[in-house]
Length: 256
Image (cartoon, rainbow, N blue to C red; front, side):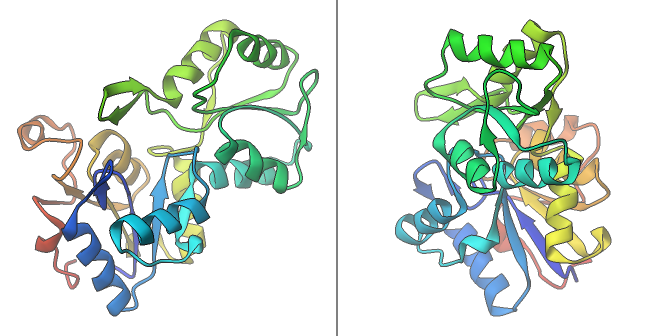
């Protein structure tokens, strides 16, 4: 059996503002069996505390903020490990900016050590100008996550990946991507669990982020057909997930 679980949120545990009851039961099973887990999200607009409060208040899932590992936290861990300096310019929401500044980084628009680009609902041309000029001067260019779109009630809206793509075009540089399916967030998450990759299972509904995060990084994966990837897509997937279920209620924890 797997000793630890990495679990996606939207589409896996809930769908937008709609609960997925099997998702709650899945988490309760992990808690009852005392199996360690981390919720792994590319969302940089919300802090772990906000995510944990929302899980409790909207979906009756009771976990501590320490069980939530966001692309924001992974970005901070990456910058700490790279140790290139403490000056940073960020395009993003308070859920990205505030934790970075709280981690000891200082806001700098002219000559930052890092430019971090994520989803920003209030992005302006001037913000793009500041980021572009700083990267041209040699700042390390970090993209929080590659998601080009965000599924919402209104449809598929531009995601962080679309914002980052503009800066990639204006600087003619590729960003260092942090979030799923990249190695940076996965390696850190496994390190936090304190386990070997072979003992961990990645659970999610999106083949291109969650499942490829497992496949590309040597971690077994469980694709649940409750969100983004549809049953009709499964036969065409280039590399199949380790496991496939219609609902998380079908999962047997002694599997492996």
